[in-house]
Image (cartoon, rainbow, N blue to C red):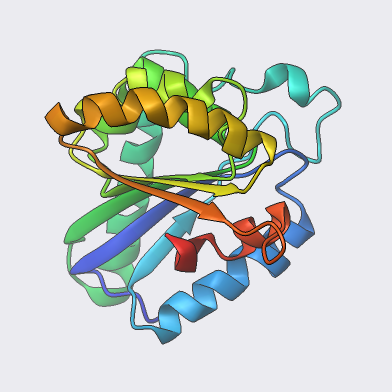
Length: 212
């Protein structure tokens, strides 16, 4: 957004869900939330890397979790984003970029990207202020992400789930182990179980900025 300030900016890295990276992802999900965040006075930038389970692929489910596995891959990507922000700052404001706060959001299948990046370690090397599982705790993704680097990270971990759906059932199991270890962890955990009558899976993704 043109209102973003170079002295202190939040970089939101969004890992989209199954069949995401579509026109709907941008027009119905991301842009309205960005507009609201700007109205609330936030200085931000958003990066949305296309995942191999996007609307443009043929075998998306088989590729979940197979991203950011190579050593330093996500770390290099974040470094590239920071260089781009510095170029933007010098070009439009005449000063180098200042503080960059990093937030990772994984919605739905995007949770598998958080998992693999946590296992590799770059997720935490970026020193994110927040990591958000947006109705994304399928299978053992949340367990594996926690046991990767998150459990030792100084960050906020947001886990949003719709009551009784699969992400909730899996998160309920994972949270038992996480809560046992949380007393010795630097990670601040925010676990929200949302009323299924008021929230759909899609609505959580459409409002994750506000919810977290």
